[in-house]
Image 1: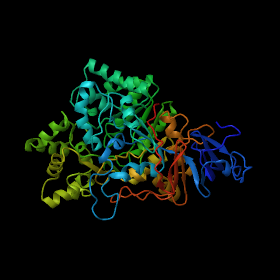
Image 2 (image 1 turned 90 degrees about the horizontal axis):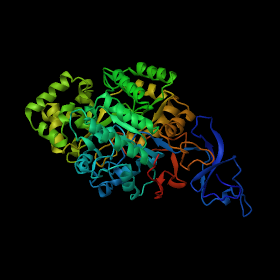
Image 3 (image 1 turned 120 degrees about the vertical axis):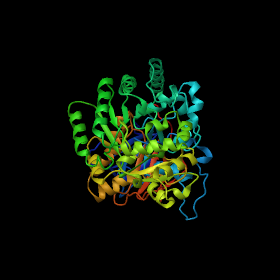
Length: 565
């Protein structure tokens, strides 16, 4: 809170303030002093000359002219996989040449990759989702985990004993925006048991709970699961309940990528509800969708169920990204047993023709408890996003690659995984627009990009376009959401869910994280062929009171930090 004689470090003048609470927009000026906000009546800062008041333009060290623009809290991306991108060093700065097309974002690396989030207005990213984080682990498991994290994050980003170690590593790497992290259940399992398909023994579960408790005490944001991904998929419900009880004691949420988002999505949702009820933890459903041809339209049942739970007093929310395609690892297209034992074991199985035939049958016939993305959709819906040693495969579907080679799609996928040491990401075109719109419109749904910023290839355009796409397509063009409602989903609602105190709102004393955008022009420009093109209409971004984006370009300021919650 500033006093009457305060000279502002920054003044954002003449804008229409959408304050993140859902309340109607109003004209106001916004002052920043010491990293905190003061909301001023419109026009009160328009004085000039040496006699101007402290809140006037002449009384501010820097002024942003926001006339004709919306001023909102900085966007909170509640679902990212950006845990390690800033730690990649030279790899994160781009170690693959472009294709000569003049598209600087073509290879998905370099400065474009690191800056894509903040250029679309994101001032806080929440990583550690889908059961995968860079911490915690028992000391004796750290070396083994480092090899596995290279596959997940596209480079040597390390593995850390706890949240404090993760935060310390990031503290040495200047960043434009803030970062918070969940604790990944899959990482907990790998950090205690290793990548093995068996139940945790009582002592192992106690060790997992202790590691989780320590990281949550240090400031991690909650517990996440990715129950379609190994090794998290090897766990039963009771194991997750025990861990979620730890999160509940800290007052932090249980955040889940459901065990199935396809044909068994309703059953998987009920498992998440059971975990929440038994543990006492608030429930947050990650990137809620009903994907694959056998689940299209099921949001007409899952969303009323969530609304019913909320009406009954359950603390349950979800997030969503505004695209009909998702992105994940190619290895996730294989049955869970194929990944038992980790990368080395997977590679050995992929080299065995008999094991390949077994995988082929599993995809064709299904495996109890397995989501089976290909069986629910087809190899023609799976395109290669990143294969560092095979860039010509990027952008093509597995079905197209197989047809060109005169080979079976499973064999093409297996050969690619072996040749790339498992480091292949894909894009899965598995949803329909009607379901996406229903989730976006749900009053308890917030926005998350699910961005996977790995160097190389053609990452999903959501890493660069999610928030402008909501504002441009679904607010301005389609009228699915009102402006104030959409901003609330991106800011105040998200901050409240994840305990970001003093963020996500514009009010006196709040943290000075802001976005200035043109409501008539804001739009995503990133595509599946040019996935890192920056958006239109995002004029300025302020983080911690420092202007990190001005006129749509980075300023070089690096005020971001890891947030302990």
